[in-house]
Amino acid sequence: MRPALNASGKRAEATNQLLEIVKRDRKWNEDGARKQLLQFFEAWGPTDEATVDGRSGYRQSCSHSACAAKVDAGFAIRTRASLESLY
Image 1: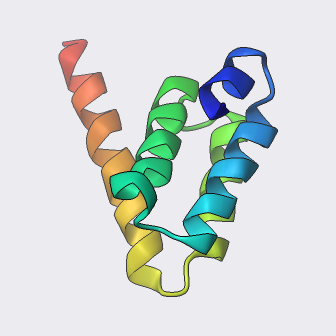
Image 2 (image 1 turned 90 degrees about the vertical axis):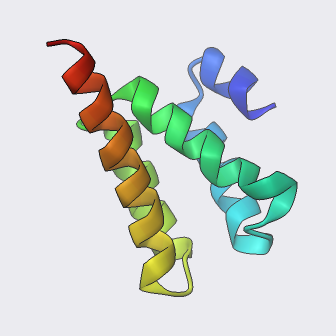
């Protein structure tokens, strides 16, 4: 459902649903909600408003800083790899 919301331009709703899943059960579907968020953030780009808001919401939903650092690190690695592939 979340990819369908994203595809229909409802980025905030898709992000909010995934954040709610992370809050309730971070390990749900083998960490599927967090992985989907990373895919969205990568597709939208690092400066897109939906990415910035989603990453902020993710940090707030985490009960400890290591959780937020994991999504930030994953996003940074993917972004760097994408940029390096351009050269």
